Length: 185
Image 1: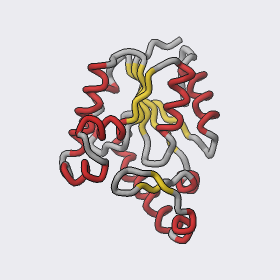
Image 2: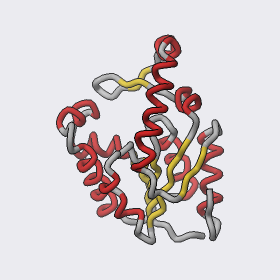
Image 3: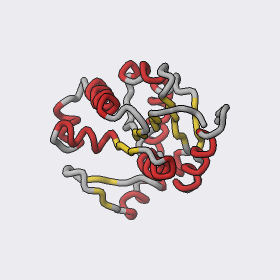
């Protein structure tokens, strides 16, 4: 088994980082952290307010929260990392021997299918009628996000293409790959 104490799951919004991370952490008996949830606790605010409070330095603030999680829990953890464009805030972690960074990728249509909405208090809600009426807009925005974050995630060597698989299938695949001596995706 590969000796990786810290697994970081990267990817654009709605790619499946949290769901896959929760399943994988149970399988590996690791503690799971969702960066968005940790930001809300650390700053005692909603994500919307966090964006308003730190419009220009939110990448730096997210990086500080990741560092704080790792300092307090430096073994057997999985963190679902919400998108951070300025990779300087996480690239130093990619060089550490005990860290495995994985970028989850999928097609715009598959990401659209997982698209969720949240209100100003971070309560998740579904509005499939609205979502489907605006599908072309959301697909366009997802494509922009994929392009936008491609550079930020460029130094993450381990890429996993979901290709519409279920979160359980992805977590099973990742578990097997992580437990192989040589991993390639």
